[in-house]
Image (tube, rainbow, N blue to C red; front, side):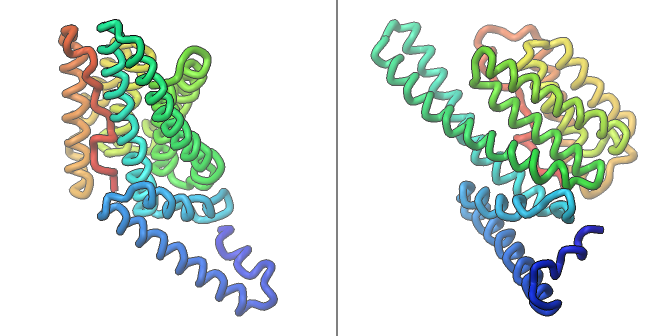
Length: 282
């Protein structure tokens, strides 16, 4: 509705306003194309930069991102955050080994290095959370996109909680819980149980309960419910999302197996699978 209203505003004439709109559209298309190129070239920081440009001009009065744009943004951030989360896990693991050896010099070096990675993690998370809060959630028109963005908000607060301590961890965990709950409320009314975004939400929300709130019972209950609901309605599975949905169902099942098998000590460091392992939902 608001799309055409401000088209010529501020321009000296209608023609100028239309031309500016056309140039804006060209710039948008260029950014989307560059983001795709960057993805192919595995240059994810540049992919983020291009999709940020597109996301930042989105607001309550504008059209929401297309499904393609939304997925490109999600993939870009998943990759930049995923690489650093993996680095953080490795460095933390080495730090623990050095501590057990009593090597205080190496422990200190590890802690400093881990701090650098945490700064990068924090910046990326706060960056996308700001865009979600200011641009993407206010502009979301459909139930599907609202679930997508609230889930994303839950994910990035969860990533902050992974490495934060004390009060900061508590705040991030609370914000993550609220975002996941908002997403779930909309998902159960607007999306079928087999929808890949609803399944991905259940997967990540259950991982949140398990890893952040240390609540394996709630995690298992949520994952099992989502899996069972999807199985019961397999006939609603669309051909387009078949691959994504069945992959996430398998991840739900894998996590349930992992969580219910009274984890042996050597398994404790194994991270549960979340929807970052799955292809983006179309």
